[in-house]
Image (cartoon, rainbow over all chains, first blue to last red):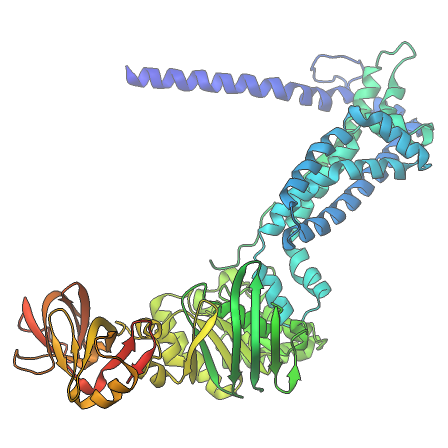
Length: 275
Length: 363
């Protein structure tokens, strides 16, 4: 009796898990299959015959290709500035006694969710306008950096706090200048943390729509998240063959980046200190 | 090689005074131990010498230079940390060579000099490994190698043995003492383990609550602890401290406890010089200066056996005298025949007498 019940609960459990997995896997499957399908469809079907014609049309669209480059500039720019500044700021915040330090960080995180959100769109627009940065990629990068930094600092601070101070002190007593100490000892040890923040920042900027949509005016500076609308008909309905192809191209860099970093770093940390 | 001078050094952290007006001359080439319970300021004192802390007041000299305001790299010191602080992302070669690398020494020379030191410290075959792949004892040697490699003027050790297990610790103790003897570099060694300090140091400073209580050679601090704090801290088991009352007459003097009365007439004049009649005092006597004896002995104290701890070469017997305990160390190794009610004799030449406030008045 007990055995039967055990088997039945197992079966029910796996059935449930399969359903949930299918629910999340189907859109992915659609994204991978549809670009190769000559017929635009919202159904998940294996393309027959498979075709590269959709991609040929997308690649021929110079505006859309230029948009992918713009996305790369925005993503990489935002990633570099966010990661570098967050690492230095987190180090400073972790190693010095600023009064009300924790309160400061939490307050910043709270506000940052407002800054990248729609609520602050009007003041952000005005700010960028008065700075003369409307329709520049730099303006968009700065807005994203400002919005991402508090959370990035928060994440980095955890990594920095994980490094025993004796590493740094030992470097200083060994004769290193503070800059050498940071470069030789601190930076390599927080590298996994920097990678986490870098990917997170890149994905965030790469996929964002609203801020570049509002701050960028000319078609030549639009990123891919905005340019995907060029594959809509004038009536406003998507041309499924082309949007799905472009969407797949748009998704690939993030995927590759994640796999690359996971392979190179694996988000591991060399243990070393004896406690 | 250099002498170290601390002049009225004070270090405050907010309201806490970690190091309180410490003055300390450390002689060129000596092995100097800073000993004390945790939180006594010994590590802060070491960090003040290293330059990792800046004194709130006072001066620090190394050699002929006033280094008070100088950063660690300009002090030419080397330090071994309690957790060794070997960089986990570097090989042992890079770890040990790091002090040379930051001094701009070329790669080939680094390899050469690290190889030399590594041979001396018997870690030559470990140079390509990372710290995590080394045992505790090997890590400790690597940390020492990193400290030796650039031939510093001063060696600083911050409890370097406390992460090793008991057997390795004894081994490393011998190794460190031998090493310091070979190199002759002025060494300051922080520890909370009194046996370690006694075994290693040429001189010991005992610290408590940020102050230095006593400085002396191991034998001096063992034989004549200046306060009851030092007496209770040094020795294992520590010195017996028995509260009693002093009776000083015109000709005779007695130490009177609740159950005993010791005749100290031979010391009468010296006692009368500093102590009043009927003053409360503390009798200090090392466990090895107590022996079992008969009731008739003039220096006998009646006691009750409480616990017997045979240790092989010796035997420690814990006795109850009224409400205080007394440790007796017997070098025969044989546990005593009698148990229950016994008499222990005090060696009168070894008696120390402390004031109730703790300072030594006779010994």
